[in-house]
Image (cartoon, rainbow, N blue to C red; front, side, top):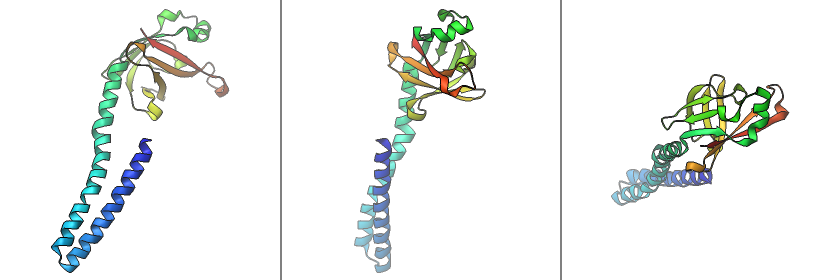
Length: 175
């Protein structure tokens, strides 16, 4: 929906910018102050359209991302659904913790199969609303759900790195 709105704003703003410039050019050629004023009046529309886009990306989105980081900050434990991964690695479910700090850092006490480093950075606002965890081999993604004390993060993992068909999900819930 957001992209359709921005396509509309860019198209609408571009159209009126073109009209404004043509009328201004005609006003300059004919030395008509009335046409110049009309061109400047029409020129307000593209300024508003492009200003909305600038406001959205410079103020609204960063504010939303910061508020989401604060909302999801906390300690996460492995949900009961991750027993297969734990059984294979001989680890108790209570030993695994993921701590997300609101300053964009994380600490992970867990197993390597998930793909997270022991410490690193994370941010919101990724592709399709996913969280991005910066790790040594690139970026790991997590799907957030819920909010506040009902927050959860779902990671995709593979038991065998060469077996792409056997990808599973593991869920961490806020303690």
